[in-house]
Length: 114
Length: 112
Image (cartoon, rainbow over the protein chains, first blue to last red):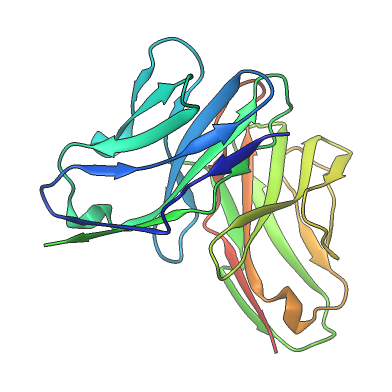
């Protein structure tokens, strides 16, 4: 069985400061890992994914995430947050031998203050 | 920009009505999904399809039904809506393999 945990319901950060959104996962095999962002009254937008290779993955809007197999983590990071980054962020995982069914975390609300 | 469309975006209906939420994608993806997103923000998979004439129930039990007669179209139907069906419904599609999901804008359903 696969599962995802996002331990923080909300992350507050001042504009210009680094932003980190935490995600840990559990799978029985090798994982595919994803980050999505959701703005109010919108669908989810894909940010980045880890499939294989380099543990540091770069994605859209200046976001990046680091895959850490020993800690089973895939934290999302941005060096300098913008007010427009305020949104709901979802981490998702699926096993490489499954058939596309993503398991989503509960979501983390990011609030960036000016 | 993803080419997946959901209609209606917002729907308010009375109890007992039959409703169909439409979802169409122009990317030729074989896999399509319906997620229900509750007010607490979590996403729950309620239906998925691996191709034409393939439909499966997801992890969350739902009274809705789906059909997949054409690759591009994956409608969701509620035969008799109840207030407990009030939620946001998100449709998504993906390629085979490690492809990410592309989501529509969602259909927010309110049943009075």
